[in-house]
Amino acid sequence: MGCKGPLTGYRVLDMTQFEAGTVCTETLAWLGAEVVKVERPEKGEFGRFSQAKPGVDSYGFLVVNMNKKSITCNAKSPEGLQLLKRLLKKSDVVVENMGPGSMDRLGLSYEECKKENPQIIYASLKGFALDSPYRDYPAFDPIATHTGVMVSATGLPDQPVKCGTSVADSGTGVMLAMSIIAALLQREREGIGQRVDIAMQDFMIGLSRSQWESYLEKGEPNHRVCNGMPLEDVAPSDTYPCKPFGQNDYVHIYCSRHPGSKQWDNLCDVIGRPDLKQDICPEMATPRSRYVHKDICDNAIKDWLKDHDKMEAMDILCKADVPAGALLDCADITNDPQYYKRGIMVEIEHPQLGKVKVPGFAPQMSAVSVEYECSPQLGGSNQEIYGGLLEMSEEEMNALKEKKVI
Image (tube, rainbow, N blue to C red; front, top):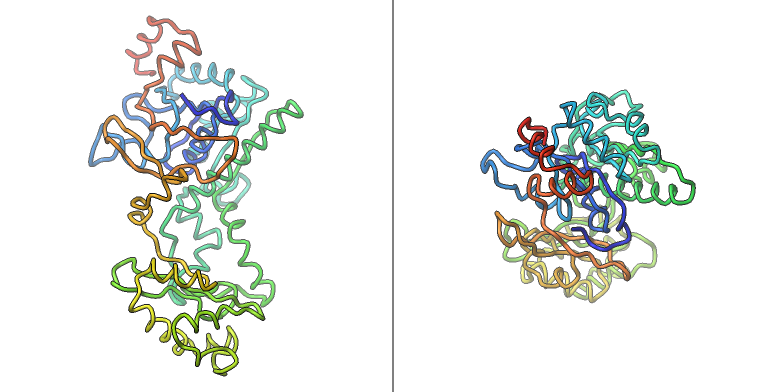
């Protein structure tokens, strides 16, 4: 199990749950690592089953746990702890995103794991940094985006709005995967293991780095500009309604703020309003003056868009060198064949859920072809890992099953 990729031969002990950590280990699995997910006997990880459908894998679990193996282990039992320590000796990486202090209480701190395997890469993902005054605070994605600058720049002028997707969770997971690969490269060169820590708040601060341009220029934080240009008050830079005016029938249009840009004039030609070109209409002469007179600018755009849907608008405008992006939702992406040709979307077969179309691995690598496998069944790899890798007998495994250790 697992694709033949650049990380083939590396084994990852996956102690993650929910989204952030699971995205990290799924990324490593897509690149070929053997990822052994550790789950609670019978119950699985906290995100596997939903209250509405107990015993049936949730779609949320499926999309972040592909290409992995699953073993069951009660890490809180003495026997379970010993099993994990035996697996640590045969692993290259351990990844965890449990609550603050959880791994220490289990007896699986970095120091303890290092005793079992001095070259282990021990990767932890938390809401807040270990040396932060907030280190013991519980955290989920919206906590990280609020405390990591992003939400201060998002929303209406008088109403901050969090992002609708889990930027902190998935983004921090991918960043941790990159850091783990870097640590493995360093181990290849220098023969050393190490601890890798990442906090979602810290990742979001880095992801929001563009906000510092205006702050350093003005000496004060940016004000929220809704769908406008976050770095400066310019126009057009907004998300405009298109026909047939449904929930997601919008297109974002932005004309460059840089001197010499012809994008506004190009837009005027497309929408049939040459009278609004920069050298003809004083109010439209610069990106900033267009912002002051947004009503003129925006009404002209909206009048043209009433006759075009979002895909038509994006196509026409982009071909005229006017940056435009249709507001695409899950249905738009899922039903567009182009994403399957590139592997951005893939179809997998789940034993309970049947055929499921889900996002795949975004990077395109000339020497790597990811072979997608469904998320694992709970404990589906117990025989392979315990019986094969740890060479346990059927009697030993059955005894542990009876005690609900595995």
